[in-house]
Image 1 (spheres, rainbow over the protein chains, first blue to last red):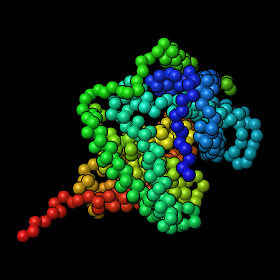
Image 2 (image 1 turned 120 degrees about the horizontal axis):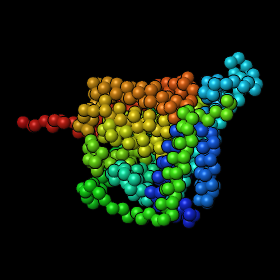
Image 3 (image 1 turned 120 degrees about the vertical axis):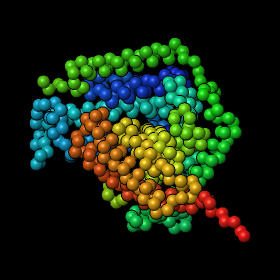
Image 4 (image 1 turned 90 degrees about the vertical axis):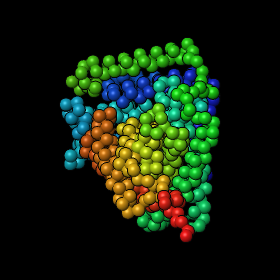
Length: 276
Length: 185
């Protein structure tokens, strides 16, 4: 019954063979550049790059199709909301006004608004492929060691790998508790009144939280018995040295994001303005 | 337990598993209110509770890790709100510091403090941090992001006030109170 969350599978592509550190650094650099830049040309180039890397990675479509639909729905709603709340945002940013079509009242379609909303979409689209790739093409136990390598404290890195490890377990527990509760007539669907539904949710959350707290006690006792956290450093079972290929990719990512930042701010504004 | 070098083992595990719980509830544990696309997010009640139990740093990291993973497995990372979740966990933990829920103390006074803490944390995270970052990072229209922030913040306040308080009370009842033993004459 529970839909499968995104999971790693090794299809042996060049992207899979890259070191986890490399993928993490590339993902972070792309995210930062994508967040800062509003330059359409840069964003388009970045999108092309991240899509081609995604293509090279050969991740099977069905592994992320579900995510893709959600992304489409989310973006569509967000675009609609932007237009409803502020149909003149593009005009404000780009300083000119080319009206294409008057809709009604204060709503009219301008090319500036279309261009602005296209940029918002682009900004989001640029980050999605590297994020998905980092998640789908990195061995989970390599996560923690890569994070530690780039300077995250090993305890925090370990906490993140614990999260990845325990999501399926907690999910199973949630499903068990909620089906058991439903069998006893505790309804969470829309048929129940809202107040009642909240109360019913509490009836499911309480055992779930108590079970989770107990799990925390158990796992931390086990870790403590193995001497976790005694030393300032630790080694990782899954950590590989960087190869030549990794250095190349990291250098490439650094160059691209540096270029993006330079080109974006060259004229002193983070927006690329085709209207003047 | 405070500085990032000195996390206790239990805090590390609580961050990891707490974030897993946050992710699972983000996906499956939301209650539809009847208004389209508006759900009561039960995971923020859990985040406030874990911040209360394990402190502000745990709250910060559960918020950041949990929200990032939850976003990645649903529609890709939306950074401004991820940071806001972390801020919420941090502040909720910071202002509810000193409540000794582990010793079974969660009466009227503590309930009040916990709720003041969560309301301040929600207000800071969703009325200020999330919309301001939306404007800075994504240059989204101000009236849109502030409306979204107000709606999300108000709903999270209600969710945490009801569910968070209920669960915290129930949890405190499972703990043995300090000084609850009486000597038999």
